[in-house]
Length: 152
Image (tube, rainbow, N blue to C red; front, side, top):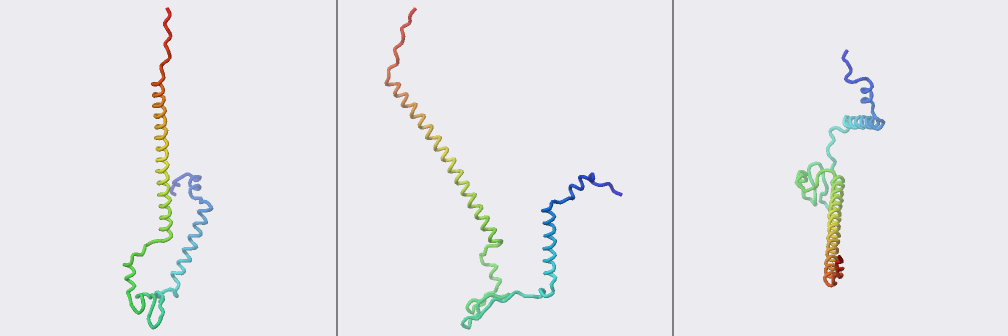
């Protein structure tokens, strides 16, 4: 008999799952079994892509598994791969773009706040300098107080 890798209490703590983890595991198993049953359904085997075509004024319009039909013009469906259609999840791309817009707005606001603080600081410094210059000019125009005579 091999020894346990950890003391029994620590092993039990590591093996127990929270309620949320148990529910997540159960849901995962149920969904996977459902997907497997759909994949194993004999009726779903050998089913081709649907044909979404119609005749309008004697001309074929629509899409089937091999071609795209526009006013009697037959274009191979493989041409779709060459079109500049954004790949991936469009909602996810939009959410990412929105997030990047918010980030740009925040960075702009931060730069603007820094600029405003710098502006206020420069204005304060200018006011202090001007006040000192006025005080200096005022002191230049007024005579110093008379000195007291020295008495021995």
